[in-house]
Length: 398
Ligand code: ADP
Image (tube, rainbow, N blue to C red):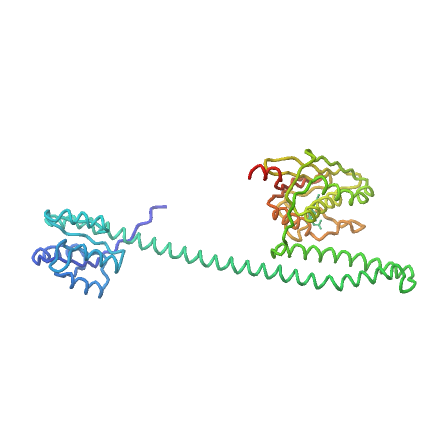
């Protein structure tokens, strides 16, 4: 592709101001012969009046005028239109003043005897630069416009997302109350408090309870995640000994793990890893990852929790030798409601999750200033790794 040509307008609107009438006439005719339009003036006052009436793109001005100096004309034109190229016309006697004018913003100066000859290329260059300047300005303008509309769109998006999280938080809260009532009464009926139930009725009640509890879990997770997204969750940070949190979560999981004959190996390296965290939220992270590891690992499988120091962070990994995750699912696994192709419903409904657990885990880890990612090979197992800032490191740093 060839270079893009800059379009130079053939006709230029030149304002020529000089008190030397004869010389001015010669120059004017010469310029007109080159195809330019020329308007002439003798005094500064005349020039200002003309400049205010019509648009000029080149001003040729004698350094000495009867009323004002050429430099004053320069100042005035630049003020009225900064893109106009002002060329000072001087003789040898006033060369210094012309050079100074260039320092102050004049486009160039030309010496009287050779003025016409020099002006030929000079005007073309000035026009080309003007055109580039105009294009640049237009580009900058349109960039600024797109930037501000992007900013507006971003703000609107943020507001919409905030409103969505807010709505979800309120809705889930409202849904929880009646659902708890349904579950509570179903439990009472299973316990036969209001009266005896036969086998068929009991089956129906069990179904109500299973679905009710599943729905409650879903609502709780939606509530949790929308609170986090709406920025309504404040972490109660304190120094936490990692092994204590792991211990409390694993003991709560013992029954599930032993029922499925799954082994759990915990290796925390430095026993006294202390992290800055919200204890309840950190427990939630471990609980979600560990339940997933168990859920997506066949009976008799192996699960491991390991932790080691990585600079100022503690890096924790929860791994299993279960069903693994397909490559195409890995990127979206932390997105809300995403469930990979591997989560086929088990007969006992155990794998029937919400697809919210991992996105909540990610939000929590990131709120703590950590990162989370997953490594997995389909059919061989998964390894969820996250980092948390170490207390010791923070203290040494400060
Ligand atoms: P849920 O477990 O409720 O479906 P999550 O957000 O916790 O939702 O997990 C999303 C999906 O990621 C799961 O449905 C499952 O497909 C996949 N997944 C999570 N953990 C594992 C794991 N340890 N092994 C294999 N797949 C997993």
